[in-house]
Image (cartoon, rainbow, N blue to C red):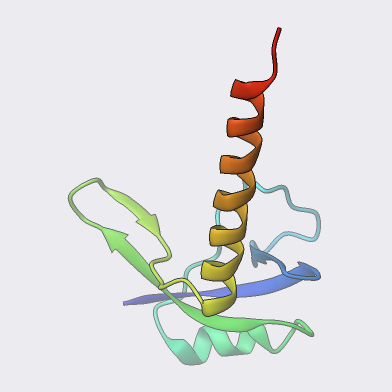
Length: 95
């Protein structure tokens, strides 16, 4: 198991600690072999939290795997409904 540090860079906008002072969204995260090492890095940030880094061995890629929160589920339902309404109104509009 490996660990990474997740930081909130803006309200509800999360990113990984990369070990750089200036980073881009394309920079890879720092991965730690122990939770303790990751916690030491997380303590450097106001919003740092330690997360497990999951590896999809079949595809050879790493990604965070987690279930959606109830809030995320609700937003997804609202977006789907809004998109459905928009699409149906587009079909009815004469061109």
